[in-house]
Amino acid sequence: MISTRPTRALAAGAALTLGLALASCADDAADNQADDAAGSEDGGTITLYAAASTSVLNDEITDRLAEEGFDVDIVNTGSSELVAQLEEGAPADVFVSADQRTMDRAVDSEVVQDPEELAHNEMVMVVPADNPADISSVEDLDEDTVLALCDEEVPCGNVSGQIQESLGLELQPDTLEPSVTDVLEKVASGEVDAGWVYRTDAASAGDQVQIIEIPGAEEHQNTLFGALTADPQNPEGAKALLDLLTGEEFAEIWEEHGFLPTQD
Image 1: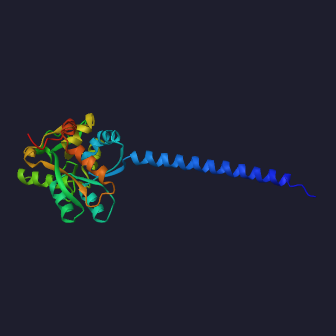
Image 2: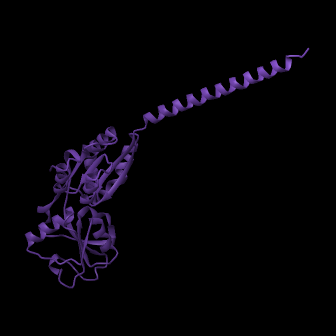
């Protein structure tokens, strides 16, 4: 007669192994559920498309929204380029423009909704720290000056044109740049003798440049606008970001970086 004890022992061992496996799966499932729960408490990532001149605010924006559980992915370049990307379907949650003209274009293209005023900015002239061309005013700009301005298609170029017209100037720049930060870099590096940039960008350069006031620039201030995109990927985060930028507490941050308040 053949004994069945080994078979029973094998079956018992198999049952024990199966039980342990099921218990392990249950533990894994519980861990996954816990991870999912933790993930649901994370606000996710907010994508901000913002004018180059606002890059000085990036650290404050990311730090403050991190406190609310959000990561922020910031793309800074010329406002016109950002609108073009939005028109092509680029996924973003919030758009900040350097002027009203660019925001109006975004509204007309139906890529944003309900813009709000954020702050004002104005133009100044900057020269390299050692000022090799010995420039002290806009009247010193002549045909020998190596000058950088923004392209007229971007906000800083548009306002530069307005100021020139009001002053009766017809400047002949040696280079037209796609963003104000590009102009600033050329001046700070000494590649050009002078450039026109926003006051906030000039301030961010510290002792790399000298600032020279442009007469009448205060009459041609740019107004920065912020808006949710038409279809934000993170609606909750987008609202939190726009609320931050328009809030009373952040108004002090705008001013610390040289921006002017929307209301006196």
